[in-house]
Image (cartoon, rainbow over all chains, first blue to last red; front, side, top):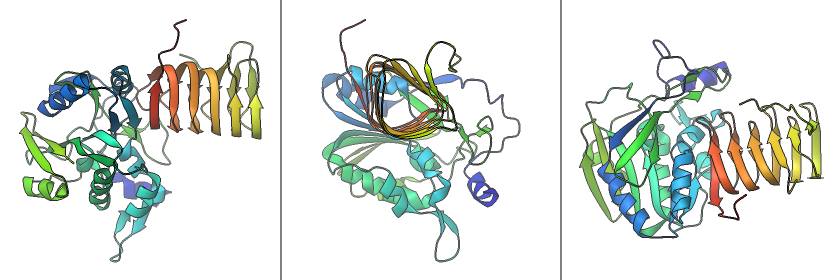
Amino acid sequence: MASVTNNLMKFFRSSSNQPDPAAPPQKLSRRSSGIGEIARVLNSQEGLCVLDVGATSATNIRFFTGHGHKNYSEDLLRASLDPELRTQDAAGNAISDSKKFLNENLVYPNGQFDIVLCWNLPDYMEESLVKPTIDRLWSVMKPGGLLLAFFHTRDAGPDSTCFRYHVNGTDVLEMQEVKFALPGRPSTEKQSPRLQRVFNNRHIENLFRDFASIKFFLARDNIREVLVVR
Amino acid sequence: MDATPTKELATLGKSVMIKGELSGSEDLYIDGQVEGTIDLKNFSLTVGPNGKVKANINAKAIVILGKVDGSLTASDRLDLRKSAIVTGDVTTQRIAIEEGAFLKGKVDIQKGSST
């Protein structure tokens, strides 16, 4: 268990100088052009199928279901940290098993979802899982469906906070810092996920190359928002 | 809020394991392991922090602090505390989810007659 925990430590920020882990995370807010466009669709249509792959949010569930949409919730970042996914590649490097991950997660019929909220998942997920996950999302989305993802720009440091996002139907998102308990550690010892990499525009275009179109919004807080049409 | 049993209710302690169909007409607190189905209709179910339930659950109110694998139908409310790990589809009138709770599945909020 100790070696698994050590392997997983690279996904978490150092716990030094951290605030009291028992304190509830403070809510912040940010303006988002991407969620503004999604909100216009959600507010003007009914019966859409929405997949939220961020940290579970009661606010989002209430908003989607309150507007007559079907809501599916699946916290993929947390699921990706399952120690049972750890394996080795041909060179002996520790990686996560993408095949096993996708056997257990994102198991839906093809073409089910109108909207996918990916948030900042690709920035914090292990490299070996990112492309297979985006490919699976392509499969489970309807043609013409929308996917929203956030990417940090080069100016963001490795300790950039990983957030849970709350939708309220406008172009403003509420955010709370996400913290997880490490496997084998007490649930009171929670840590924040660590930024794994920074994608440039070309990487992002490659990641979504099977999608029909891609639109970038550059925000002031070192975040590049990406709205993709399946 | 304290979720440990304090009033009259049936309790399955953490050393108890049950496989099969579980039904009743009183509130139930499960801190052990249950596999099968749980049907409490007009009563409430609490799965304690040590509880591990693999079952489809039907109750008036459901409070989860432990691990549940199965579909949940709460005719009144579902309450997922911060230690909850739920994998399965959820149908309820009202839902509360604490920061830290894990939910994987479809959520269907049904607007029934208000109480």
